Structure formats: C-alpha cells, structure tokens
Image (cartoon, rainbow over the protein chains, first blue to last red):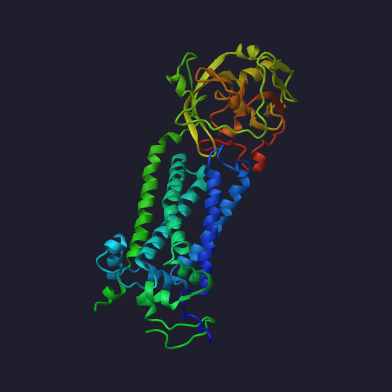
Length: 226
Length: 241
C-alpha cells in the first residue's frame, strides 16, 4: 500500500527564514564574542585574541542592524508577520492566564491560537526590544570615548543586564523548538517553510483552519483544511 | 463582532516602544551612579601626604582582594627582579647622559603619594588607590634633557611590552615611578618592583616591571597601540594639544 505523505501547510516564506537565521547567527556570534570581551582573566579562553574578538563582535552587530532595520521598518515585507506578532486578542490574554497553570490542574482548555501563540508573541516582542537595547547601548559603548564616561559606564552596565534578561528568552525559545516533543514539529517550519497540518491544527487552530494544506512536495492542493 | 475584538490590539507594539522608553530612562538614570567616572585633568589624581592611609584592613588590601579587585594582565612571562640588583636605565638621544639607578637611589628622589582611581580600558576600575613613588620629571631632570627629548619610551622587563608618553605627559605631576600601593610593596603581578603610574590614562599605558626609560625625538607605538588602541588613552576628554 502506498504511504501517504503528511499534509503540510506553509508557515514561513524563504524571506522570513532568512531573516530568522541571520538574526540567530549574528546573535550567537555576538553572545560568544561578547562573553570573550566580558569575562575576566582566568576564566577567559580568548583574552589573548581580544582585538580579533572585538572585530567579530562589531561585525556581527553590523549584520544584526542590517537585518533588523529593513525587517522592522514601515512597509517592509515582514510587516505582515510583525503585525501578527504585535496584535493581542482576547484569546491571547486567556491563553497567557491559563498557560501558567500546570496542565493537570487546568480546569479549562487553552483557547485556540493564531499563527503565533501568545507566548511566542510575548517572547518575540521582548527579544526584539532587547536587541534594539543591545544596539543602542552598544553604540554608546563603541563611541564611549567621545561621550561622558558615566554614560558609557551606564550603557556598559545595561548591555550586561540585557544579556542576562535575554538569555532566558532565547534559551526558552530553543528548548521549545528543539527539546519539547509537543512543540518540536515547529522546527520544520523555520528550516523548510512548512509544518505538518496536524501540528498546526493542534497548536495553532485558528490559523490552520483558515489555510489550504500543501503536500510533501509543497505543491498546493485543495480540500485539506476543515 | 467588533473588528478590534476580532483582530486584537497592537499590545506588542506598545510593549516594544514602552520597553525602549524604560530602557532609555534606565540608562539615563543609571549614569548618575557612575558620576565618579566623569573626572577631569584636574581631578583625576591628587597628591596627598606621604603618611596617608587607605584605612583598609590587611584582608582588604588590593594586593589580596577587594570588591573592586585588580585584574592582572601580562603579555608574556611575569619578570621577577631582585631588589638588590635591580637597576632602572635612563638614556636615549634626548638625554644629556645616562643613569642606572638602584631602587634605593630612586627612592631618594622626593617621594610623592598620589590618590587616584585605576581604570582599565576593558571597563573595570579600582578606586582611591594610594600610589607611592617619585615623579618621572625629577628623574628626567636628574639625567638632563636636550632638544631632541620629545617622547619617553617605557620598557618593561619582560622584553616585549613598551609604551610611550610625550615629554609633556611624562613631566606632569601625575606621572610617577611607583613601588608601593596602599602602604605595601607592589606584588609581582602588579609590576614589582617598579611600574609607571599615570592615572590620566587607562591601565595599559601604566607599564609594569619597568627597566628602562628612553628619551627620544620620535614616538614609539606601544604594544596595545599596535593592535589599534589609542596612543593617548585619556580617561577623560583628551586635552587639545
């Protein structure tokens, strides 16, 4: 008997994925090189290459800025996606209230969610604000010699605090994408563009119900969506 | 159904912009706690009486550990000099003669104690240090300068590290050849037995394990400056020259 390929639905365009992976790559280059600049001697494996590490840090920041400005500016192709992230419906608030209750103790189910659930929206907004904060405080540190030393020192302090604030957000994002079985199928979407329809219906019912599925070859078909 | 109820409200945008506002306000407010960093040429260091005390207990001495501890860097091995045989050479095309000073001879120059913060260009600092030593100016006057003396190169005993100051910087009240911190001899990691202290500039200009001062007509580019760091590493807005 011929095995039927699972029905898929398109979740991210090639442009969405490119922006995501450019931000992810520049973020990790910034995180690792930033640790190399921040850690004191004794626990710092790259202290002797400080100049090269600094160059990597600044170059990665330029990549991040080059991606974020066109991605967030008005009229950009990603605006539709950003619009879906920033809009919070009444269901989103209900979802946020209920998700903090352990599943076994939850008396009511989570309400159906759109293309992004309320947790993803919140995580994205907080991370985006932190990235802009990194860029702003980093720019002050970069040009610190020309500014008030106290302002440069304050920016330095907030740059470090932001690292501690954003690390749990990124870690949580990675745990959900890579380790949690119920959310791991989403990884397929950011790698190849499409996710399984059954996953979309389970986790993002409002969005999935409005879409036409595509087959494994990703050629459009009709009739899959209820 | 109300369209806004269906589509939701742009809470994410409001949160995003609100967080940026909070962050900007936070940085602007936090800078007041770093107001001590806004020093000037006139306040970066002050001469204090020779018997001044930091008031620290033995366990708090920066040679041991403090909440604002020193972090020790070296680009090669850390030299160790026997204080009995140690000599500081002073020479160069800008000098009228040559000197080879023992530690005792050096300590016979008029002593000064500078109270100043030590700032590393990597961001850390140690406040209110009491550095004891003699002014570079007095040593230069002892050997004598000629018209070619425009710069002074400071050589570390590790054979690798050097840095330089203009003759005006080297002759300032704040440039001293230092052997003592807060009443105790420098430890080896901090340049024992002798280092340059010039609080107007970041730590990398303050050459440790000093062996030689050379008066020159041309400027030598120091170790870190060859890697792109500023040759005039002022901790405040650089004075116009």
